Image 1 (cartoon, rainbow, N blue to C red):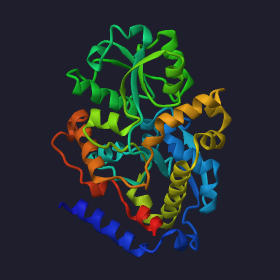
Image 2: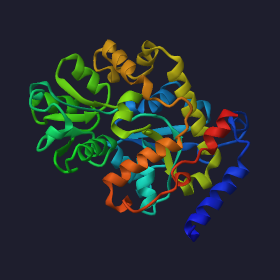
Image 3: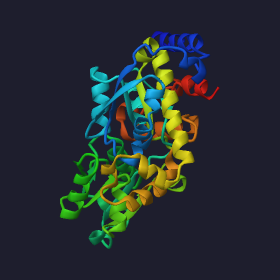
Image 4: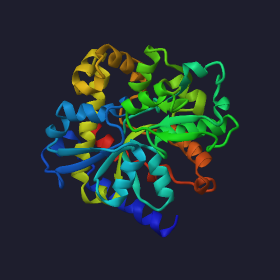
Length: 343
């Protein structure tokens, strides 16, 4: 273990030891070091990020004494950049960002897992269904993603490589978090997309797409990745955790409340909880989209080592800098706050 890793590990242990009793009851009696928080996300209306919206709309942040401002970016890669640049405190984004950033010397750590599966679907326009029957036939096509470098783009690139193509064999078109992706596909600007619900559910209902890969379920995820593949997570910098452990505990408490609400609620309850604009004018469509994606949400806020190994394999495939590197699991996920919240 090099000196940097030793210092990071011992500091993390010291913080965890100091605040080991900070479960919900203990944290409730403590004031957050930084009650005013700025959280970044890349496409807030997407079901991938539903736990964030639920925590906001159901008042779980306020219950924990937190005043949260949410900045919605055009893609997850942009919210990550904002965190590194210092304009955000926390990001709700793809867990794999922690692996990539740790390998680059940026001490980014997840503190709560929100998604067990990516929930991402790769599909093409229905008019191309006879020509594009598998991922290997996507070569030369234009594909919509939320943003280059985001999880929708990375999963598409991984699927290409796994099917014998190169990551740059398709042209990526960043369309942000919703309506613009629908417009791009329907107008023929793109040939297909790598995207999430409720966009996918709407396109399915309208008969606009042919699905090639579906990771909204465990079966579909294992088919592509060979195992579990953690998706959305709450992450921040190690220095922020070290300076604000009570704040992070309260934040994790709020997200775990959101996950429990999702598990206990009917699809109709979920549709009633989100902003009206999320429904895209069709509540029944949103209900259907949630049913399709429900399986992907974390049950307990944990990121498993199996999931880490699967994501590490994907990251090594996509990132030449990671090909001969190993980022320890312990540097990508700190389970202590989830564990404390469960006490």
